[in-house]
Every structure is written in C-alpha cells, then in structure tokens.
Length: 237
Image (tube, rainbow, N blue to C red):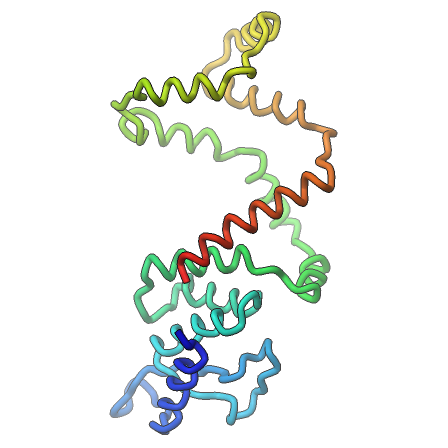
C-alpha cells in the first residue's frame, strides 16, 4: 500500500474543494480541523500554504498515514496517540487503532532533544506526593478486595491436571527449605491474608535491595522488550 499517495490524494481533494471554516450557527456549516501538510516536527511552517482544512475523519486518517510514512518518529507517534485517546475526538475509534496507537508510542524511540527536555522537567511537590503514594501500594489492597468471591474471574473454576503438572514443573528447584518454611510461618502468625501479602512484598523488596543488573543484562532485557513489541506492531500494520 502506498501510504504517501493516499495521504497526498486526501490533501489534494481538500484543497480543490476550497473549504472555509464557518460558525455552527451559519448556513452549510461543516466541522473542519486545521492540519499541517508538512508536520511542524519535520520543519513544516505556520504559513497558510502549509495548512489545509480536513474533516475529523480525514484528519485522523492523515495522522495515521504519517506514522507509516515517517516510521520511528516519536513526535508523530505522540500526535496520533493524543488523537486516539482525546476526550474531544469527533469520530469512533476501532479497537485495532486503539492497540496500534498504544504500541506505537511505547516502541518508538525518543530523540535525544526530547530526552534532555524530559530530564530538565521538574515535578511539583503535590505531584511528587501523588507519585510516592501510588508507589507505596496504597491502592493494592483495594484491588485485591475488588477481586474476591464472584468478582474474581477464576471464581468457580478449577485447574486441569495438565495445568497442575505444568505449575509443579515450573516450581521444581524453587522449593524452600524446612528452615525457611518455619521462619515464614512464625513471621506470619496472627496476620490476616492482606497483611501477609504486604509482608511478602516487603521481604522481596529487602532481598533485592542493593542488587544491580549488569549492563549486559539490561541490554538483553531492552532488546527482548523492543523485539516483542516490534513484532506485534508489524502484525497490526
């Protein structure tokens, strides 16, 4: 599919119609949105020659086409993402576009210029407090409570023998010693299910504290993460 050709045909059609932006109470009113033919992030100007009026649907399609034409452009990916998730969107979004916008933004690399701007950004004290609370797991217990009983997606179901065997094999070699079992049992006496869960999370945090991943390990994680998401987005396109 020639995305550039489709993009140009939409722009040309809009130009030939000599569209005018009218007010809602005026006769023959049609909803239009301003679009930069050459995106500003690619050096496009603010002059009228570089602007065209498009319908909401045309504007959305054009921005999606731009992500195909200029692949790996973070700013264009963000523009399409904002159009997809905006509260003021005038058109219906398909589940395919929803997924595409989400994955596209997550796998598109950030430019060095944008990265420096992000580093220079300072959070307000109010924002820092909110981030701190969210990372302390304040809402963790509420999420567990909302999944109890019939609200749990696995309620009334049972694991098959095949699944049980797979879980047993996965745990082989990870069985704790009797001494570890006794220590855990003593530490959990008198605590309810949710207190035990939080205790386990704290123990895991302490166990990993001070440990750092090697640069090789970090690189491998990054490569696998990128390769997996890139494969998904290629299937969508």
